[in-house]
Picture 1: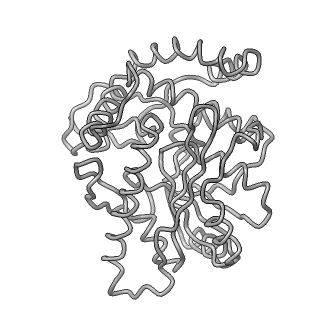
Picture 2: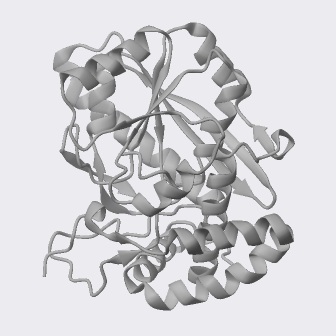
Length: 323
């Protein structure tokens, strides 16, 4: 049986259940939420063999690539629990409930220089951490203008929950189908010194549908060309952005990746290859630093003929998935 594309995997949970967990957090705080989340995570751990196997595969390859890395007891269950915390934090961020003092901007000078350059750029994010916190905090800087490319159709329940909030929301662009109007909208964002946010660790749906095999945790994995292909068309700098939870704090990392402003057409293919390799390397680096924070609960190194027995996976910790 051919494995389904990740965008066809059904989201699990319900809006009522998610609202209940958020209500528990408001009443009992982090510790009360975490205690109940333990039992909720056990339920989903048993219910989602596809996500469970993907977690194990990721952790196995992470340990092989970094033998000195120590994972906690019951690492796949703890991975599920970390996902539940990330989902809560995502909603809190988009509701404006994350205290600024809990967020550390590790590369503040790099971000400031990128914004003040007025050149705009493309921010490559991933399913590591919680980049929605960065989006919410962008409201504190009126000169930071973001457009987020997302595939939202596979996470309707989670989107419903997010839409109940009143906090700042980014400019979200659905990218299942991209036409000339969307391209013009993205170009306008770059031209005004703004940034386009797109994830680079999922097989593509729209944009350029091609992928390339890049070494990731010691094995070739399929990374989409789309983000860097888009950067080459928009002729803009590219950056790596993530916000990862470290105990009760959130660390925001922002690094320069490359620059396509002077890229020649004949050099485009090699430039994209170099960018994908660098992006995968930075993603691997931060997976080793925050091993339970990569929430790609889908066989990342899967082959087209992989057989699976489940088509249900945890809802991604995002308002849909940035493509």
